[in-house]
View 1 (tube, rainbow, N blue to C red):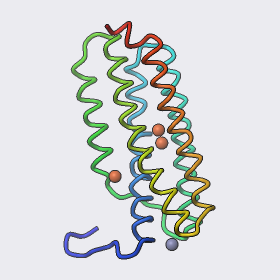
View 2 (cartoon, rainbow, N blue to C red):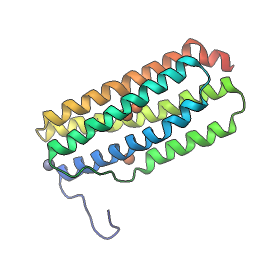
View 3 (cartoon, rainbow, N blue to C red):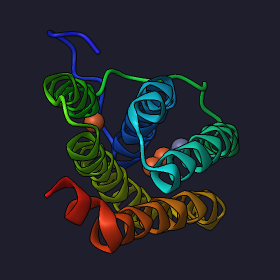
View 4 (spheres, protein in one colour):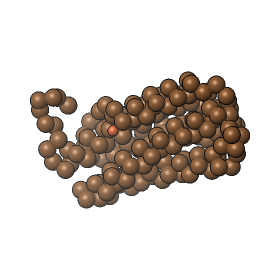
Length: 167
Ligand code: FE
Ligand code: ZN
Ligand code: FE
Ligand code: FE
């Protein structure tokens, strides 16, 4: 992605660019989740984040399949949005001293990540279908489903005790 060249010309280029964006994001998430897991105290939260780390690794595999189906090289492009979300997460976590308040902060940070992923996958699925690539759309749908489930699980954890304990 050069400053003086425009690399995105067609709708297909835009799809591939955004695929590279979420591929980078998923890899950054996989890199950062262990730190969040180590900071979590609530057993269910720890377990939930661990389960989602496993899912995240599978999601990366599905994205690699999409690249292959689409006939393009597997690679990421910098996503300043996910870098910012993850940077903010670790910054805030570093400022919280109480363990139970930290759990609430970790849930909020994890949900910001899930919502970024949900918006990207929603767009990619619509674009894949428009491009006539239902095969790509199906794989992306599986990732989206997991992100939505992870988000709902985090909400439940927050509302079923983590927030109350933090307060
Ligand atoms: Fe993901
Ligand atoms: Zn193509
Ligand atoms: Fe991005
Ligand atoms: Fe996720």
